[in-house]
Every structure is written in structure tokens, then in C-alpha cells.
Length: 178
Image (cartoon, rainbow, N blue to C red; front, side):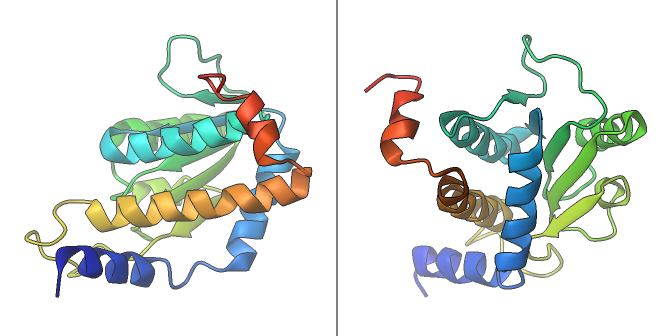
């Protein structure tokens, strides 16, 4: 099997248990949130940032945790955390603090029994890290990251419909003003 075909197949498997109900739940949280904070580290952080960009283009008030201009989180804020292992210390600590403050913690991980999952109000499980991939075809978190990217991108058209937003509306909020 070709590597691209392998990755497409594995990402599909990783998302098999994610259905319309999960997307509807997250879209409801997003559309009702006053402020949205997103955080991830490493490649998971890059995937989280791509979703943050789309949310900004949809008109939401979004901050990426760790940026110098990010305000402090508060009670009632929505926090979306992305971590394959669910054990990245900075992500887990962010979840603990946000939960203690009264923010809604929504986590995307591959580990049901992780510290991150234990400190979250909602957990979206994408695949499972145990015995799933070979380093030769998908090293480290490749499948999780690809599947998370696809999941977050699947949210955009749903949010567009809920908001009545068009691609032109999003383009008008695009950072490059094209």
C-alpha cells in the first residue's frame, strides 16, 4: 500500500467514531461562547492554530493560548485543547486551571484515560494511539494530527451554515485581504 493511501485509510479509521452529534455539540459550544481560547503544542498546536484562523474568519472572538496578546481566561469561556497523548504538561495544566476557573474545557485527544481527558468537560476521541501505526508509514502523531485537521475543517461548513456566513464573508476577514 502506498503511503498516501495508508494515511488516508488510517485517518478515516481514526475518525470513524466521530459523527454528526459530536460536530453539532462542538458547533453549539462555539456559537454560544462569548470568547474562545485554543491551545496545542508542537504539530498538534499547528493544527489547533489552523482551526483558530478559520474561527476568526467566521467572525468569532478567538485567542491562541501562549500568544503575548492573549487575555486571561475567565468563567464561561470555551477552551479547546488539542493533544494526541493527552499528557503534554502545558496542555494538562491549562485544562486544570481553566476547569478551576469555570471555563468549559473541550479536549481533542487519542487517549481516553489521559490526564487531559480527566480535566475536561468534553472529550473528543480521535483514534487510539495503541498499536495503530508503524513509524515507517506514520511516525509519531501523524495520524492523529491529520485526522484532527480533517475534523476541524469539517466543522467550518457547519458553522458557516449556522451563521449564514459565506466564503465571501470569510474572505473579508482574511488576514491577507485578498
